[in-house]
Length: 209
Image (cartoon, rainbow, N blue to C red; front, side, top):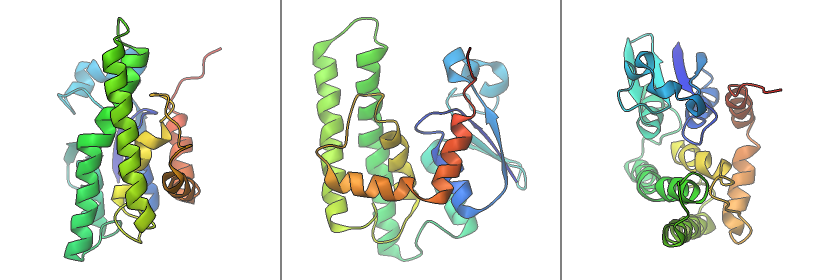
C-alpha cells in the first residue's frame, strides 16, 4: 500500500499514472501548492525540499520524493514499465534524464516567466519558450523512429514526458508542429490507467463557487 502526496501538477500526475498502470493500491493526499501547503511543517517532514510529489511505501516504511526517482522505484519493485534488457533500460534512463534536465525545466521556466514573474522579461520568455520548443522537436524526432519514448514498449519514460506535455498550456505551447508527439500523446492519454490517474489528480483541486 502506498500513500501519495500530490496535487494536479505535471510532476504529481506521473505517480498515480504509474500506480494505476501497475494496478497496485494507493491513497492520494492533496497538497494544495496554490495555498502553500507544501511549505507546512507537516509536509516538510516528508520532503524538506517542499515539492510534490512524495510517496510513502507503507510496507517498507520508506518515503521518497522526486518524480523520476519514484517512477524508477515503482518500476523496479513491481517488475514492470522498465525493461530488464540493458540497452532498453539505458534508453529509458536516457529519456528520464533528458526530461529532468531539458524538457521539464524549460516548460516550467517558460510558464513561470510568462505568467508568474513579477515583471515581464522578454529575453527570459524567448529563451525558455524557444528551448521548450526545441525539446519538443527533439522528442518528435525520437518518436519518428519509435512508438514510445524509449522503444516500442510503454515505459516510465513515457510517463515522465507525459506529465509536462499534459500541462503544456501552462507555458502556452501546442503540438501543432509536432505530429509524432501528437500521435504519441493521444495514444498515452487514451490508456485507461492514464485516464483514471488524471481524473483522480484533477479531483484534488478544490471546487470554488
